Length: 101
Image (tube, rainbow, N blue to C red):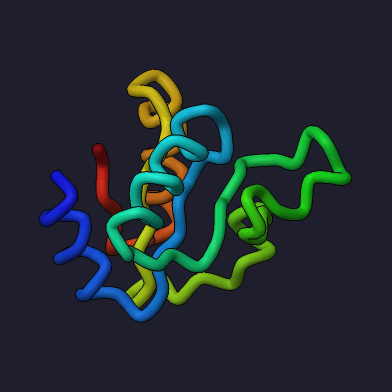
């Protein structure tokens, strides 16, 4: 799985983790130990307005990031139920590079 994430990362200008919960935190630590860089966390909405970073990495909403829909990548770091909520949003807004775990 790490090698396929590494290949996905190489195909993108920037990569973001969608999800800043327990799964996002776990995955970000794993990527860090494997030397795979990502640019920030995406959240659907900021429930806690003081949450601006996690593990030293910026946390912003999808609109705040200004993601290049063709050249940046989004790795979904959430459980399946949340993925099913997020996927229609990403596809309807024409995001092209999406990686599901």
